[in-house]
Length: 169
Length: 271
Image 1 (tube, rainbow over the protein chains, first blue to last red):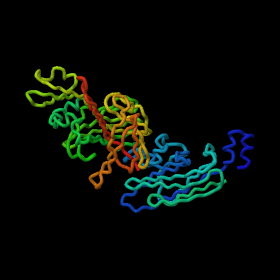
Image 2: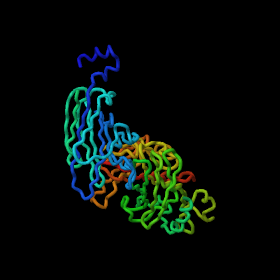
Image 3: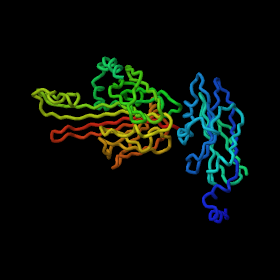
Image 4: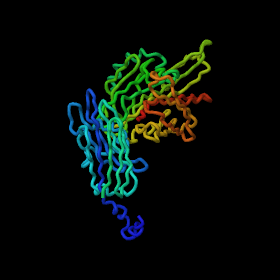
């Protein structure tokens, strides 16, 4: 950090993104839930700034194709927190972000540093929200630092299991 | 829709006198409750129930007549209700949200009331203001008149919210959102403005009541007061469908009619 003023002088504003050559890996565990009519959860993964506004949505898993239960986009609103904080302003499907719902188990979301180059170094929160038809909703937050190698972890209690975040160089 | 309303008309005639002028029914609260307010997808349907009742959103008194139903689409144009039906305790209808943005759903009524003495008795006349001249008997004395404006409304949004439907009409008491009415979350503060005939309504009491009273003991009702600019702020104690109500009465003077304006709204607060 001590070098930063010098770098700024030399390279101007582009220097802010320069030290970040890292990748972001997120692991999301979807617990197996015994229920008479289990539906796979809708899940949103996004990065929040310290003021709790959304910096970037990383993944949204929802029913991609229209079936006899209708268009999956109809239930995106059930990811309430994500919907309000930016989901409703996005067009779905979104390249590199949206994908189909996942079965119970551990799922990885790996985001190359290039996709996050507009993210200035600093403290952030990785947020995972899961909402399940005829089930519950849960939000898990994991603080992490962007700009240096570090990891963070948190665990949900109902709709989400362990959520891990790793920033690697 | 005109046709549907005409079919409903005979049923409307059987309504009690209290309903003909919602403003006189202070003991009963008017409400227009949506089945949901925040929607996603390419299009969606929302159902609405409307009634006048003792309990908020509990249909226990009478259905609301929907002859003043005014729905504003996200681009400011008029939208039409479908499947209008009037039952004993509630009226209902559907709205097909076919484009993204915020819809303003309102039941608006304007009227004119006169009270007068005739033969030693105090009597009342109600109707449209245009019908009033010459409506009273020739021997009516001590005439007092009041203009009434009532608006019962709610808001629903498909996709991202917008503001085009929220512009005040400038007639009666209206809510002008500062915080968007479909962006309300438990624990967060929301600010709105009340305007009467387009001007800030200062010092007006607004009752804020969460639905579901049947299943709890405490009404948990909140009263807030508008400031000089007509603004008031509510911090939602928890998620739920909230009823808000306010009215402004101005006495008549110098032979001019008084005014009685009321606004009732249903706002959904999500967890």
